[in-house]
Image (cartoon, rainbow, N blue to C red; front, side, top):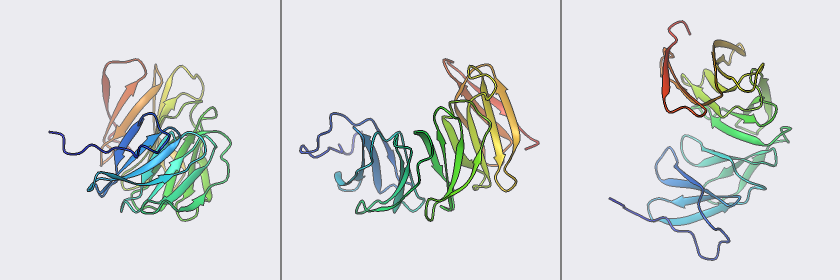
Length: 219
């Protein structure tokens, strides 16, 4: 049963909404449309604020309380915003390539993102957007970047560093900055996740109609 239709103001020069997701507090919906990030009020079914990010917005993520959000841009920068009024809190330095995906740690202390072409995963401070360190182990594509196990580890997956047609999954120990688990597959990995205790992995490869479940009891 449909409850609401979240409509955009007619004055906005937007042709179509490309994606939408809930904030963790379920009070707001973040929509991406025509190079804009739009925060929508779920309770009143109206638009709240438009975030003016330069270029396209390929990835977004809310903080756990839903008060702030981070957007990725093809201008090679991350930006943190106040969800309520759209004020920008900080913008990172250019990361060298457009950003593909991002995730925020459960404690809102760190943010991780991947850049296209170089396959680098950047870990930055959520406080001010400064760079902390980089993780390298993939080729050009890293569509999966996800904090897991209460933010102690980072799951990354995409193309192989040695052969861009193959896939690699890495589960990083962030304290030591090393990959504790490595999984190599025949095709590029487009989606992956790990369960809470780190014992099971699920992967989806490009062009495949099925998902694979893996045991990782030693991680």
